[in-house]
Image: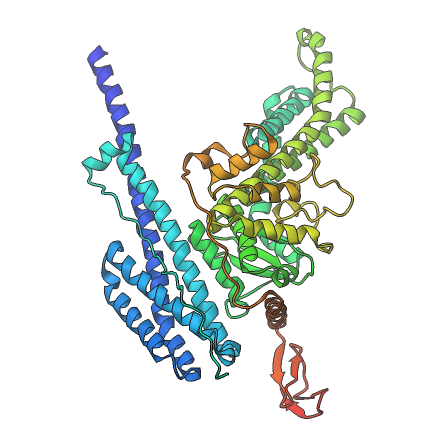
Length: 189
Length: 385
């Protein structure tokens, strides 16, 4: 067999390994990020559904917390409207909602009757768990995005990435604003 | 290491075949058939056997929402596609185990003692450890190794009996092999004696290594190694004996169930590394990633060998430890609530109905009670079931 054919075969095999291996891996990682994003979406939606119930339960026990409750409902509606946008815009809306919920939970501390209510306790458990799930799903999504971005940018696979237009994804962060309110002293217990 | 134990099986099979049938490969085939049959039984029935031996009961989400939520959170953090079945074992001992031959058919079982004693972060650390066993397919690995070990032991026993009672076989080969026959006999005897011992040591070493990997994975998923560390501490200081554990099921538990029976917890035949060492590694981690776990292990053992497999370390980056989650109520009240929740779940799991009498007493009705009405022991009112 002429030497040219052998070299050609070797080059073809090498290229196949680089691109075959790289391309499949990129597809796999991109699907993993999509999957992870879908999981975040599920948990965020679960939070939207829990909030009206929570607001109703708290309203029944508290008479002076209208603004806090309204803030929560408003933040939830805004976040829900943005639910079909990308990671960047949703990140801000979801952070707002998390902060509003945190303020509500601080306020609830002052109502021992509410804290002893079975319904409220079950709701609070669900809400805490949903917040945790959002944070774990976010963690998993960000880890997947990091792996995917690495694959699109590091040497062997970035060639295939550029050829088949795999673009880097953006991270998804939620930051809850620190509540530094001074403790309110109330003499009307 | 798994390759090592597999190689021992093949070697024993080959030697038996060579010595007794003048054909090494016949022995090999016999060894593999034995291995294959037991493997199939263990793989397909193993988890249900294990769960029924431990008297575990499956729960639904309504039975114990907090536990279900914690398992679901760990499923999300680890990337499993399906939540494992959750079982509760009615036992005051503190332990948990995971079983299941692939990630889609897995189960996690926890004792009621553990559910009562641990707070949310600690319980999440333990569940994270179990989910890590499922995700890293440790159950499958240990079952295969166990079968390899069992086959080696069985074949060695068989060969040693045959040697003792059968004497040297009549050799049909020519005289050219007569001189080498004696040496082969000695080698075969030595190997048949050593093989089971070596295989056992390898088996336990594999088990210990996977435990370290599960600890590291749990720290990575929860981003909070102190949770698992403090759970292990609580487990270590408890004195309850686990009634339904035996040596075959021991590797799957979070903590060695035999640590109090006089068997040294840290010798070569132990399925788990010593708890104090696991706690120390977790507490001296600087971050939550695998390389942080490696670093902590190396620092404690002043070695540079490391303990985690290379493939785990390849995909790693710096990960920060998060803050502990605050408990909504103070510790004593939380402990009381946990006990109450756990006992409610256990009543429900055992199909007891609960009636509340007008005086406030809760009446527990056993599952197949034929009376249509019961009298409250506190106030005497009749309640209809």
